[in-house]
Length: 267
Image (tube, rainbow, N blue to C red; front, top):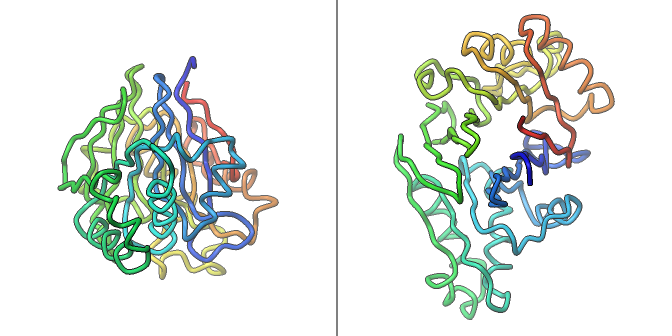
């Protein structure tokens, strides 16, 4: 493999039905795959299959926060890990609230013959704000995004080719995170809708931002590339063109507005 990639398994916000909830696989030079968030159910298994990714090859998972569209797919990945013959361990990274909920879900919903295997097969890594951790040949650091709704972590990833990728989570950028987000080679930001459509979709009432807002932040942070995700689904046919156009009105660097299952080469 010549370059790291991001496979966007889903690009939509919480209540979508024409695309999948936002989640993605970050694959590094050594072939390590980090799955970031999992969608709201067993659709994660479908998206992995459609992307040509064997779910057995997913051994590292980062969950940003405990909203249903980000955490519930993890139960299916845990279940598959518990029932497979001689699987890889599944390492799950997140803050305490997410880890506590996953344990609760598993103990409440899965049969005892499976949950008895959790200590051997599922490794929970409880992270604190600012913690660093290693996934394959990637060095990561998590950070609290100062969510207004639910405790949420973003992360920076230093790739082995020295590129810096920053995932801001699914709420508007907070200046308290500037030290983490500054000078990213790849900045990943939610953009619920176009600024031009703000009266229609009410992003600010939902604690989200627009493509224009995300682009202004990217310009301020000196990001070299911008990836927009976690959008509404009513404009899927024109989303790529119109979101890109609005973002580039204030941000001259490359803008990516991926569709579900699209692969972005990080080069």
